[in-house]
Length: 284
Image 1 (cartoon, rainbow, N blue to C red):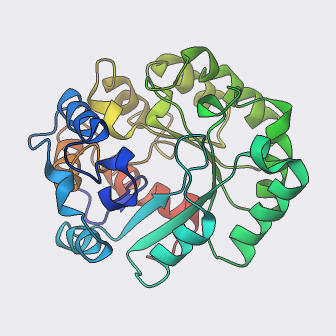
Image 2: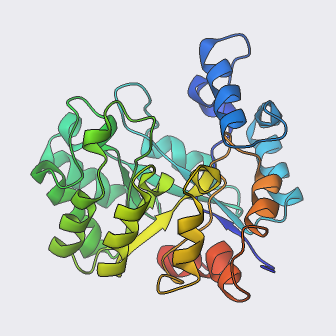
Image 3: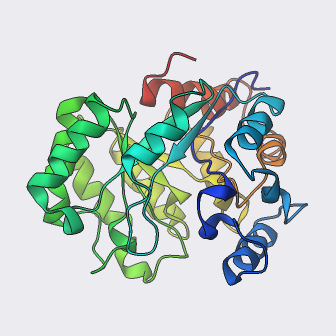
């Protein structure tokens, strides 16, 4: 069994109503609903992360070595890179990932912000969400290429958001990731939500391109999710990474449930810890 854990996707509820900040709002009910859909035993567990102290305490209590807090830059949710930096800088248990929308920033300013986020703020990667932007774009849209190039030059990963909650599944198809992986062979590409429901397709892309890393997070518990486990037990042992997707699934339950999914001995350590440490170049 894995002895150490790095959670590749975790955000406290107090960060935004989208994460269940305010009881009685439609967003709060959606967080509860999604928790139920992916098997959470307590669909209101996220209310515990009402402030940074409570969030970090839960991480410590769960014995997670590091939790990755991913920023967002979409029309509906914006966390500035400075906000993410301020949240994580005082807590060794937290790792910050910045975010950028090159459509909103413009190509030149976006690249400058990427460089600042990494070299000045010390964030460990850059998140993009073309399939959740306005207008909707695929991951291989040329507007994103300057961001990819900057991350490749800086030696940091880029993460790409996906999943069935996208406004249109047409813009979160895995083939686009393959195009990016081919164009930027030295760029580590982290695929959040495992590009579910296109499980076979993203696994095919990752089989071909070893610079593609998959974080199935809560969707490993959805129908078809066992294919991620099969891939990790085979050729993609170093390309599948654990993420709880908190607040949409509990930290402790997710760790325990991952350990029951059938990962081979040794593989589970890479999935839960080793792969994330290597990809994000963490000293934990």
